[in-house]
Length: 246
Image (cartoon, rainbow, N blue to C red; front, side, top):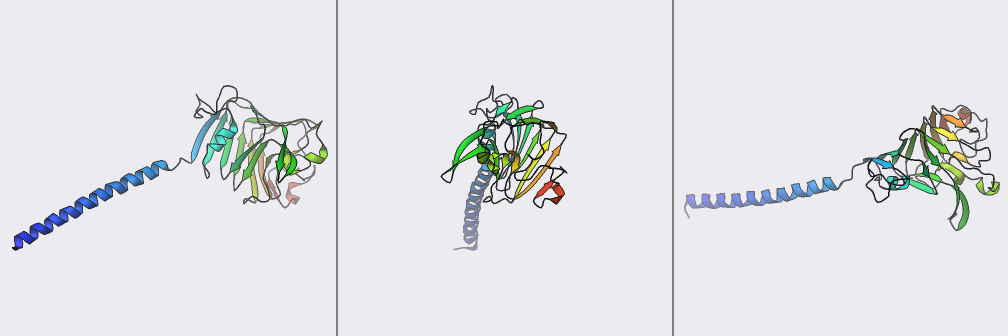
């Protein structure tokens, strides 16, 4: 074969390789683009309206969810959700937050989050719970511009409510997160004299801040489970807070 023929064969082979490479590159580019699209957006913005919303809605301002739990569950693990309350909300049981940062805002200010007692079974043992939030695996919460309405405990058995399960926001010793971290800003706390329970509860470190709060009732002695009223926060080894007297 002549030199020209060999060169022609090499050119043909090279063009074939280039064509194969281009095809594979296009396939790889398409696969990468699909993978990027499939990755969930970690920052979410949800709206909740328990009066006019529906959990089958997309959670937008015009088509809000009906429940806070739906908004939390729609947020991916590792994500941040800003949840705007367009109506007062009744919490009937626990909203579990796993590996997420949840921020709840009243829209407009002072939408009520109404809390209640309820019964549940844990490890085959009946327990009395306070509805609210359970933070797990490094989760954090920010509540701003809401009114937290705690229930009357007049008919409650003190023996059943004297546990951290009757805390509004709680965690557990077997959680992988040793710190319960919560921030309250521009919130109102409505607390009946007969209320039995706490704002926060967990066996580990409790870190919380409260700013611009309005309190109707008595909050001292009800900040953190198992911390007596009048305790100085600086003397508590597992409490980090800007509240001086607990």
